[in-house]
Amino acid sequence: MAIYPAFAEPVASQDFEFVFFTDTHLQPELDAAKGCDMAFKKMRGVKADFAIQGGDHVFDALAVPKARSLSLFEMYDKTQQDLGLEVHHAIGNHDVLGLTPVSGVDPSDPQYGKKYFRDHIGKTYYSFDHKGVHFVVLDSVGITEDRSYEGRVDADQMQWLAKDLNAQVSETPIVVVAHIPLVTAVGQYAPPPAQAPKHNGMTVGNSAEVLPLFEGHNVIGVLQGHTHINERVEWHGVPYITSGAVCGNWWHGTRLGAAEGYTVVSVRGGKLVTRYETYGFKSVEPQNT
Image: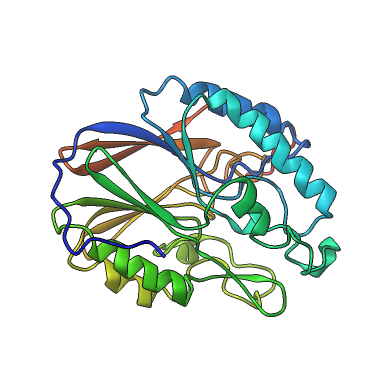
């Protein structure tokens, strides 16, 4: 476990830009690889210091045979190389290898669940610093006993998060990233599911435990994915910004008015400003919602 200093020296934040892109859902079908390539090449035009991938790299790893999952991750890795930027990654629910029984992957498999992600992409939760800004990337995917998923930040991670935040001086700007949203209004305007889900997979079910940890800290923004929509909700002075998906409506066009795209994030004077960029992808099977 990391050892945190009792006090950290304040560092004045500098202005910079980065790219937040999420829900690439890469697959060989529906021109998805072409779409990702188009998006990454346009992102290269941003004067960004780095990029953050907000989860759901592939479509998908949780309900398909292992060979398919591995080929998708390999395809994603090759496609992302065109981005030409350092990328920090958040884990999404579709990145959990062999999660559901229909995948045929046994839980004893050494790459089952989040193990493949940890070994080949990186830690599922962590923090880093850049130009005086502290970034916290959370793992918001909880694995249930019946081999499904729910939105959840587990107890060990909560303990780590509290220590990580408390190691920062109060003035330090903090940006939090979570795949499944901590705060969203999507349930108020998205069409209801045909059948009520067994688990709460749309939002982080224990957000009421997570959000108080932000109090007393200079959290300038929370970046989220998963819902494939553009949205900004403010709670206790913190903007919760959900980005539209690179894949839009799972490569079928727009999702609740959000075209395929990504979010450009600017840090200016210790504040967070975002803009959504589209890249001109045209679905071969439009099914806009």
